[in-house]
Amino acid sequence: MDKRTQFIYRLVFGVVVIGGVIFLSFKYLMKGPPFLKVLIIGLVAAVSYLVVDYLIKKSKEY
Image: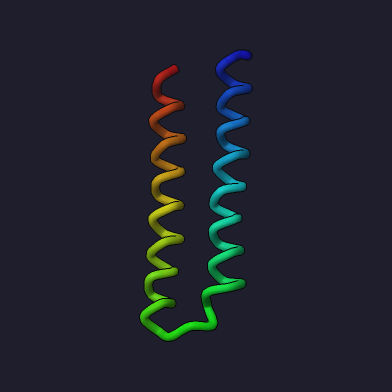
């Protein structure tokens, strides 16, 4: 598998992970108290940052 195809697979997997976190967070956990809502927003931000950081690091290796 060439580098471009690997990057596309990583990108698609990253989008699925971020989308899954957002979906599960807002569907199940937004019914809680305000403190929990702040934690959920932090979770979504942290996961998004880590996935994008991983993709950038892997794309610079090529």
